Amino acid sequence: MQKLLTDISNCTHCATFLPLGPNPVVRASKTAKILIIGQAPGTKVHQTGIPWNDPSGNQLRKWLNISNDVFYDTSKIAIVPMGFCYPGKGKTGDLPPRKECAPLWHEKLLIQMPDLELILLIGQYSQKYYLNNKNKATLTETVSSFEEYLPKYFPLPHPSPRNRFWLQKNQWFEESVIPILRKKVTSILSK
Image (cartoon, rainbow, N blue to C red; front, side, top):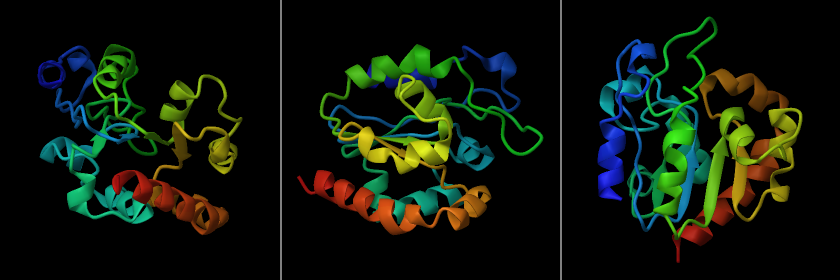
C-alpha cells in the first residue's frame, strides 16, 4: 500500500491540465472499513494537502456524526476522490474531476483495502462511475433510492454550501437518510 500511495503522490499524468500543478490528495490504508469517494480537491485542500479540509468537509463530518480525529484516521476511513488534484476553475465553480485518475488508480487502491464495508459515493461523478448505469436519471433520484445500492454503496449529494438549495428543497434527505447513514457508519466503526 505504501508504495502505491507514493506512486500516486508522485503522479504527474495530467500535469499540463492542472492550473496549480499536481498535488494528489488521497488517504488510504489496508485496514480502512469505510471509503469516501468525492469529486476533486478545491483550492484550500490543494494548498493544505488535507482532504475535506473546508466547509464541505465540515458538513460531511456533521452528516456522518464523527469527529475530525475519526474522519482522518486512515486505519478506519479512506478518502479517495474521483480526481486527485485540483482541476481548475469553471464558470460556476470548480471544473469536474479529471477523468484520468479513477481508471488509473482506483482499482489498484481498492484491491489494497480488503476490509472495506461501505463506500460513500459523494456527488454524481462517483455515482456514475461506480453504480455501473444503475444510478437513476438524477442525483436526487439516486440518493433517494440509496437502499438499492446497500450494503456496498451509499450515494450522497455533495455537502458543499453551494448545495444549500438542494438540501432546502429535499428536506427528506436530512430527516430520513442521514439517520440511516449515521447508524451504518457508527455500526461499522464500532467493530
